[in-house]
Length: 315
Length: 298
Image 1 (cartoon, chains in turn blue, purple):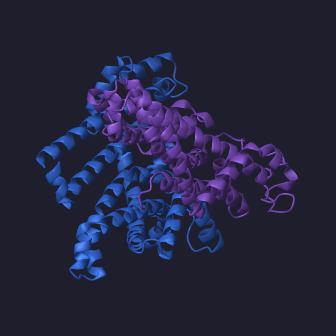
Image 2: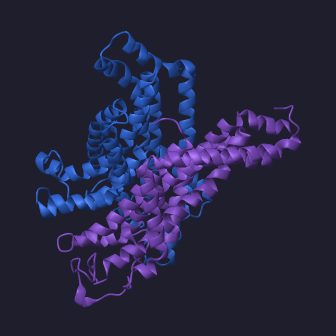
Image 3: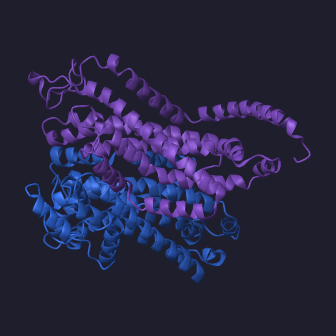
């Protein structure tokens, strides 16, 4: 167990290290002079030289990387070119909005995917199963931004029930907040629900054909007891992993969803940073996203060992 | 197996081919029992035909603006209506299929071309090289697909080619992983070991014995990753990072449509419906293919 944990953490640290190299090189590969971008278009040669000196842009690339890494580890990701606000502060302001959106989306996805997935595994090859499969395939195939536009068209334009865009903080006006979050959360939750449902169904089918399930039946347990006490607990373990792996998709989804519904969150921040060529912001945001992903998956792997004792023994 | 002389290897291949046709016929029957997969494959083909025959199918020039026909609802002359510049939406949807098909298929081909050889070599030789490749792949996979694509398009500049490259490179690490895992599984098989025992070199073992046996799994993965690539291209174009106007693409059409939802909702219906049905058909066909090639009972 301890050996597995150490090994797993070591792999994560190496991965994080590679990520910093990729991000740093990636931003350096963007065409154009970084000094020109930071100093603004009307800066003269002397101004450019001053900026190069100030930010150490004359140093060799490995030196620049080491300095950037040393600062990043201490939580200093530089400041936005556009707003002069620190990158970390900007992210801290935007993140709660996206976090709320993501939580709602995950709740919606779980509420749909797990019951439907379990049911369709249990009633395999019946009408239930076919309908559930068809729904999941549709969820996988529908482009999220089009689904968003269609929801706006129906609920905002046609029926006038929900506001089409904008954001109100929850603690300012909970009702207005929920009204504005409902459609983005549904859009973001749909794709996730589709993936989770398929995974739930597949892993439940595998579990239902296991020997201990047959034993449970043959000792006379009712179907309900078998499902809830024996099958679900083991069947949902792979689902936890998928949920972890889907974090990346969730962030990608948030970028699109926030763009459509004009939610001023983390996803919109990324797109804005790219369009305004705010490189320190792009660099910081991408680094944070990738690191978060690595950490979440580390946690998922650790939670795996807690959920399934077999892994603890065999690894 | 070792008692067989190497000279009969050809006979083996022949028997294999014969067995192949028989199992092919069985597979075909199995496919026909799954109407959704057949429908999916047929619709994909229809879209391919539509992309190839765009100049004949869409009589109106997709780029021709007409100020007297701005945002007209669907009619006989313009079955899908007209857009904010008076262009025929039907023509633009038909021509847009070229962009989507091209981006989806090319991105996946790129991912295969880069990912499969790397995964093959890493899985075959193992050791330090494998560790290095896998750490790099892990890091690559930690960037959310869209963030990576947006980052790459920022570096390369927005265009259809660059969006395709970005999507392809974004999908590459999953092919590296899949290929490596398949190679590891295949390598343990007796036929690979016996090929080696008969003196086959590394290249021969990889190309003649491993690749043909992992091909079907890769084909299934390719079919199910094309819809993702098509949607990704539409998203990049929607965000303004892919195809640039006035070239018709479903993503850019939806971007424009969003501004006219109240006055011209039909502008948003058709391009989205096209993406949806193409992606759904690829997914249906991919599911059918998976059943066909991997007969585990899911």
